Image (tube, rainbow, N blue to C red; front, side):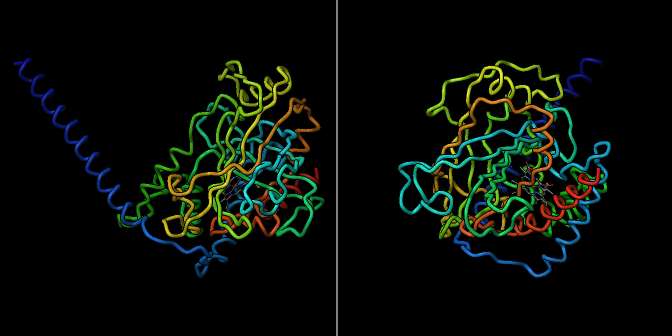
Length: 378
Ligand code: HEM
């Protein structure tokens, strides 16, 4: 009797598993067909600004300021995103000597030219947490002594060109309207539900939820051991591009960072310190750009869509070398905390484009100014 019961349970579970597999496979096939159809065909190579974007942006700034106040570290006001730094390091960015004519644009206009730079590595979260927590990891680069007019500059930083990235290739919302509703839901403590704003299945953002889950990934072995993406698009002279920075051994000594104790809260900083300050080995990257081909589905206004590399491959335009150095001092850490990186700290040839970048212009400036003002009063 008991045996028959267990056999019955076994058959039931077996059928349930087959049913779930069939549903999963069916969902995947439908998703592939749907997005294959939806994400096809030519797109605009110009920005398309929806009505009401500016008003939404003002609301997002208020929400962001509320968040930095919630996460104040004792007395200091931290960044609203990427609050925890693994270190600010000096770097050299050298334009590729053999750059083709069409890629000689803006700060990459002179092959062989080397720019001095600051690089800040970070975790994405709004407040510092253990490095082993799943999170996005950020890399922000600031080229120094860049001549010419800037779209925006921080006080005391008129000659800077910034590149601001994190280590996923796509963003978890498409535009400012979705950012506003998602951010507001998250501020109300919703996590997964932030992607399901109502009962109407047409409003469900399952694809964006999967992107968000993938963005929160386990830590790399070291901050210099992962690929960082601009995610949003930019001008590059006459081209529209996305850029990325990939680790590269080319011209750099082979090095494997010794295994770090990942139970320690700041093991990513430890890994950076081990390589640059103890073992005195440089870290190297390539800076690459991917040009938009508007004949294909490479939209400007939706950074949740990856531009197909098989249609438009990334091309290396510069090498980044982080030389051995001592970076982990109280003075340098404070200097780094007080710096502002902003994709709009840019010359017009590298203008940020698309809705998420337009939003970032207002929000980074407002949050940075707010925290600088609050911290300078301490
Ligand atoms: C393409 C998408 C994005 C990327 C790649 C990105 C990446 C980054 C990185 C790496 C930082 C740290 C910069 C540093 O080291 O100082 C940062 C800071 C920040 N991000 Fe983003 N972010 C993106 C989108 C957004 C959006 C949509 C918002 C909000 C509207 C936002 C708000 C902020 C704020 C407020 C800061 C801190 C600014 C400061 O206080 O200096 N980011 N972001």
